Length: 111
Length: 117
Image (cartoon, rainbow over all chains, first blue to last red; front, top):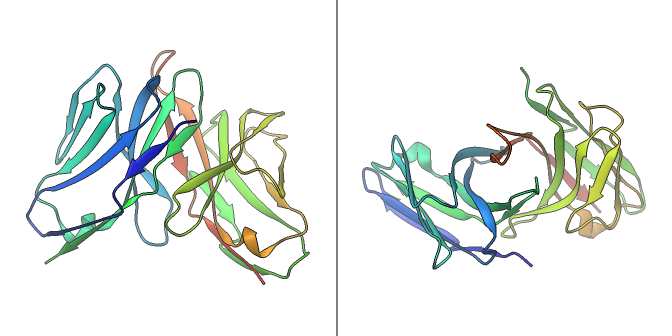
């Protein structure tokens, strides 16, 4: 079945760039997503990328997709303490409305 | 729009009790989902629905039941609660954006923290 893997923890200093990585196994994935979860809250969609793209930029967020290696990354420029949260990678397959989520990467931003 | 609302926020159940977790969305989304989140384990899909009257099992459906009589509501029923059902439960809804083949953007509720003792 599908599997999505992420590193569990990342610590950066305020103002640095953060890079969160994700690998997936389903070669028929059509969309890949990044969600953010702040403490005590539900998940919030940050951005997504279509599988025929290799990069998408949205303000401080840059998503890179290497479809050959099934590797997805999320870069957050000028990371702020408010970016501290858990970040989930997810994938979906065309024709299916369900997502497969990774276990999440906890990002800790220190002043 | 209130988005996706869930009640209750917290609940403690004794083993063997039953309860219903409520979920309502006001965005007229066809698709609705129930997930459970255990520490360090990400989200696991319990059940989902692609429209009123249609439900299907996800990855971890055992011990749960759902119904979808309206577009807005998607309650999750726990029968005979067990300690293994201690978790945070999230309801979500989605639509397919853009033309056919677009991404499913899921919107999440704030969650229900359930403890079974």
